[in-house]
Image (cartoon, rainbow, N blue to C red; front, side):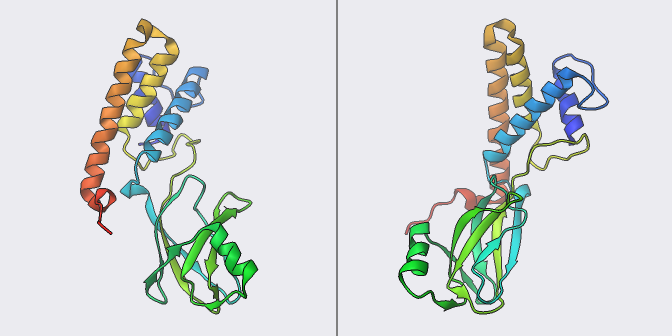
Length: 215
């Protein structure tokens, strides 16, 4: 569904007139804010399969810091693979990286370890690698890429829309202050139930998300 369709779905549930654009009225703008807040909650609740993507980094000799283009602060990591050397890379702490770079002579070779280190000027995550690459290696970062707020009417949502609509409707009912809050409580419960259902459906397609392995 698009941003506009989500807003109109909420307006219908509130018995309000639909709009031609999210920015048509001050109230539709408010509903748009609720939709974005609900969407943020839904995005953050689970590593949705629809948001999973692979970002590729191609190293250059003697360069250890790289920007993950498209990975903003709302993204989360699933795993990292050195595709050239055929091994899964390991996360190390910032203190460990400082020790390798400052307390010893840094090694060079095929990267084995990584550490997230800051954010670029355009908001993308940056990553440090160790050993320092001594040539060209292809690294694959499997991530969940959570998007920024919807802004345009035609912006499309990738996560399940039913919980977004129900949660945004609950926020709107709460904002109106109707029936002492009981209606909004019921609406929030419906939204949470819908979210749990959608997570269960997605988990059935990706069961590794909730499978635990003994070490």
